Image 1 (cartoon, rainbow, N blue to C red):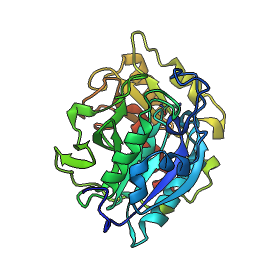
Image 2 (cartoon, protein in one colour):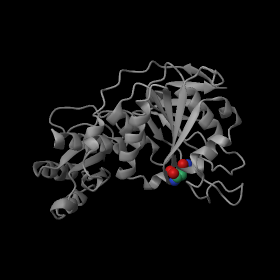
Image 3 (tube, rainbow, N blue to C red):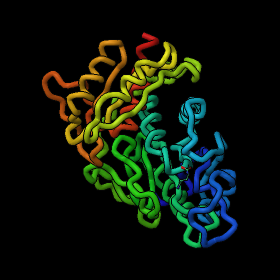
Image 4 (cartoon, rainbow, N blue to C red):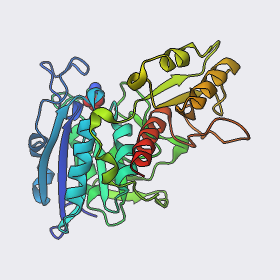
Length: 322
Ligand SMILES: NC(=O)CC[C@H](N)C(=O)O
């Protein structure tokens, strides 16, 4: 859809901070900047084409996404649900830091599984940079939020539309920092026009906002560990030795290859399981699922280790209410 279409319904932009709202003293400095300095209304004001779109802005948070926390997640999920419930709203855009964006995207998809589009976007260069990427990403994200075919939690970045489940940050510096596993990108945005390249798959139903009712201090602790040469399970045993409330409720292991584990690490994880700690097996490979087999510890499917952690936290919250 052309973003200049006057009949287009309203888009609400929720600001949370990140580099897209960052500033540096020197325009040539792409790394020595402060994230989360500009308000979301200032980001919109920097994109003249957005003046023609029916937009509202809401500042939900103002942080560097390396510091994203459960309280902000809970507030964001509530605000997203409230804005989506409005009939005059076609879709949402969320501005976010790139560092933990994929975790927030997966969290919102699993909790809300929205029918309307919820489009995250971000930037790899601060707003003051010579080659700032935030304004174009914001413009593209608004175009996707208005599109009748767009649905669910998406990321729009560097002209590409990604789905929450597949996307991950793959580069620490380049402006096209995100990829989708197995090339599963959904589409492209070119001069405000969308070109879908993959069908949108059927989404699982959302777990519901109610599961977030528990105080965030009491949300389950889930840690991530790796398999690697000579992984001996001592880290697992150190965690199990922690006193009552401090010990993790769940562990995600980023296994090698198809989620494989050294004999010692697997033994330690089975001990954890026997003691009531939930274990999920993911892979440290960049792409591809963990295909379940026989007696192996439970697989996280195609979820990356950080998303498997979000999934386990949400499953534990959901089961605690059942
Ligand atoms: N490019 C970025 O957005 C990363 C900056 C910052 N650490 C954040 O995630 O908020």
